[in-house]
Length: 318
Ligand code: FAD
Image 1 (cartoon, rainbow, N blue to C red):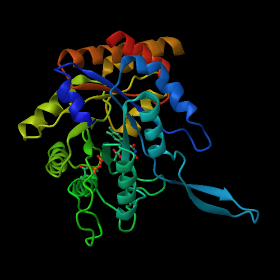
Image 2 (image 1 turned 45 degrees about the vertical axis):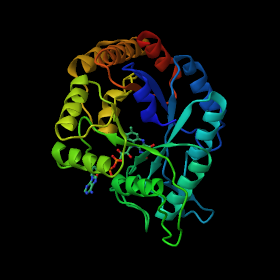
Image 3 (image 1 turned 90 degrees about the horizontal axis):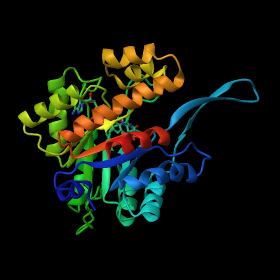
Image 4 (image 1 turned 90 degrees about the vertical axis):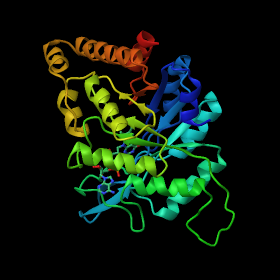
């Protein structure tokens, strides 16, 4: 079923969903099952699986020189999605990124997904590779998520890259996109960022999942501004608890967002790792409860492998 159909059928109830990361290359599917098994009692209708672009690493050769090599550290998104659907009978939402894909490769992945009866995708640009400094698309790949949305929408209308294909099978993808309550860091300002979001919705995107935020006021303001400019698709808040001291600096740096004073101060004042985790968990529970009380369509948790913490939060909220 499509993600948006779950929202439509929920009768105002706030659903729950989770995002998982493919294991590092060499790992097994068991890592995904170990994360999801304990979360299934909360009945998520769908689970997201991230996609990871190749990264460059430097491998020392016998000559003593280093060779720059590209490796994809977390492959397997499509297979993991099929496996999740098979094991749990829930829908899986693969993330698709522009980075590292030509349009032709994207089309072939979409065909695989369609054949696997995977009818949802989250369409993203992807970040710049380490060492690149800025996002560099593949030759004959997409520059922006907007172009990826257009390609998926084209396939939904039976239009393939090869114009010679007539009466092509129409896929039936529900298309999600990313939204940034605190602005995407490359956008000159919030108005421009929202205008690009609007273009993606006009091109066929059906719902938005937000970047994590730690102050609900950013989410509420974001939704208000979207609605004011006519973006009327469901906007799902993405949530992640702060659990470790280093995240006080790492999360703002990596995700370009602010941590509220009260949360940051409480984390600094907590004297043990356990106490800091408790602060973060409690904060996320309060955030979740407020969002749920306001009737958001779904609470989407970034598990990042920390199933025990996400379980605690889900238990308190659902
Ligand atoms: P875009 O919509 O293309 O926007 C990128 C930037 O360009 C923005 O600043 C935007 O304002 C600007 N822009 C957009 N259109 C135009 C235009 N036409 N002209 C000029 N500027 C424009 N990354 C991964 O690699 N894998 C994942 O699985 C993944 N999952 C994610 C899930 C969620 C819910 C979120 C919020 C992010 C995720 N990301 C993931 C990160 C995401 O790829 C990055 O944030 C990336 O930098 C931007 O992606 P986007 O789809 O928002 O890009």
